[in-house]
Amino acid sequence: MSFDRKIKIAPSILSADFANFGAEIRAIEAEGADWVHVDVMDGHFVPNLTFGPMAVKAFRPHVKTVMDVHLMIAPVDPYIDAYADAGADVLTAHVEAGPHIHRTLQAIRGAGMKAGVALNPGTPAEAVAHLLDLTDLICVMTVNPGFGGQKFIDMTAKIARLREMIGDRPVHIEIDGGVDPKTAPLVAQAGADVLVAGSAVFRGGSVDNPGVYGQNIAEIRAAAEGVWA
View 1 (spheres, rainbow, N blue to C red):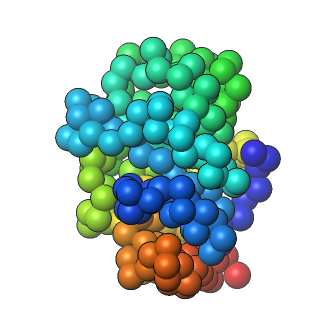
View 2 (cartoon, rainbow, N blue to C red):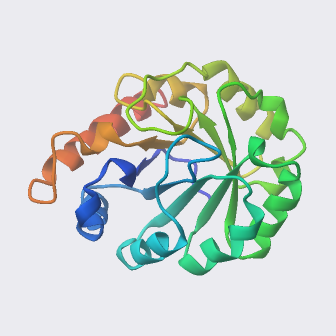
C-alpha cells in the first residue's frame, strides 16, 4: 500500500450481507471501492461483537485492493500477529485501548502491516502528537464506536488540527462514522482523505444489484472531491 493522498472510499462490510461476504467484497471492489474496511469488535471495548482473525483470514482471498482492519478491542497486542497472519494490510488500534499505544504501533509495523491509530470522539488530536512518525493512518471516529448507522458527530476541528500536526508526513486521515454525500465534503475540506462508509454504500443494493453500490460510492466520492477541486 503506497501513499497516495486522493479521496479513497472504504466501504465497511459490517453493513454487508453477512451470509455472502465474499460476493459482497467482490461487488464493492468492482463498483469502485478503493479499500475494504473490516470492523473488529470484542463486546468489551465496544458494546458489540463482530469478527475475529479467522473471519478476516476468510475475507482475504476476496479482497484485491487494501484490507483495512479496524480493531475496536482491548487488549490489542496479543492479537497483532493473528491479524498479520490473516492478511490485514492496515491494522488500526485505538489510542484508548491500552496504556502502551507507542509499543502497539511498533509491533504492528514490526509484523509487516501499516499502522493506524484511532481516536474516539472524546479524545483530542493531541493524544497522537508523539505517534505521528510511527503512524500511517489516523482514524477519526465521528460516531461513538460499536454500531453502524449512527448519526455523524462533527469532528472537523479535530481533523483540521490533525492535518496541521501531520505536516508533510505521509499519513492518511480516515473518517469512520456517519459518512454520506452530505458529510463527506465537510471532512474532506478539513483534511481527511479516506472515508469509511457502511450503510451509505450498501443501502439499496445487493450482490444481484451491485450497480447501486457503485452509484452510492460515486456520489460520496464526488461530494468529497468537489471541495478539493
